Image (cartoon, rainbow, N blue to C red; front, side):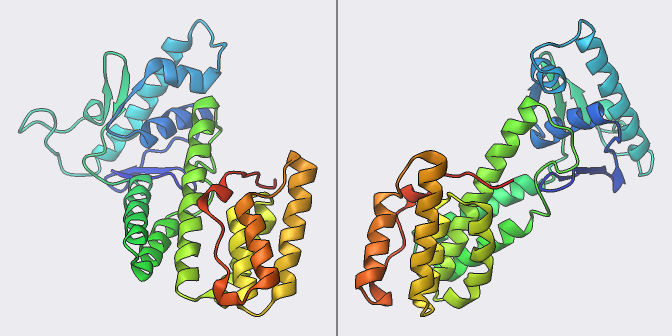
Length: 281
């Protein structure tokens, strides 16, 4: 099974799409695909579909959506040679792929790695390389991880509370990987190469202090001291206006360093400066 979540939802079995076009069955598949090989409770699926006020027929309707998904899976399985299911020698069925469990349902991936799992594996390797001081390796692994994103997670899915919460988690993980990849590139002296990318990022994430600190550092080490200080002043104005906060102590130290020190002595702000995150719409 192929599962792609980091962009438009795409789930295939035997190379055939099993992604429904109807919004609510699509929501069901999205939540099952995100948690592939793990049980998703019926109550979580019902909350995703109808929030805190489900209709009396919610469980029956959910079962109908599951049957619709199994019809798509069965059609995909018919395209291939019979495979072993729960018992050796028996054809694999739709119920072997979308399994009914006592408390809910499980989508069996067949051991395939989803793009989310691949992202988590590669980014984890990147973080470990950063910790070991292997900045070329970290930049490479994190770049591979980020390349798996083709858009916003579940970009074409009508999302309820469960998926909205998961989207926020995935986006935060994406930003953490991006922050560390940029940090690795800065450690490798790629200051000028980062300027265009950071220009876009600080305009999208207007209160993300780590990205602004990295932009200040890249500008300053590219010989653009005045622009680096302007970035700080714009960030400060936004933080005060939108959040009633001053920049973090680490970022304030960085600004003072830019005012008084040579480029080689200016350090990036500490990780704590990453905490304030408000993307623009």
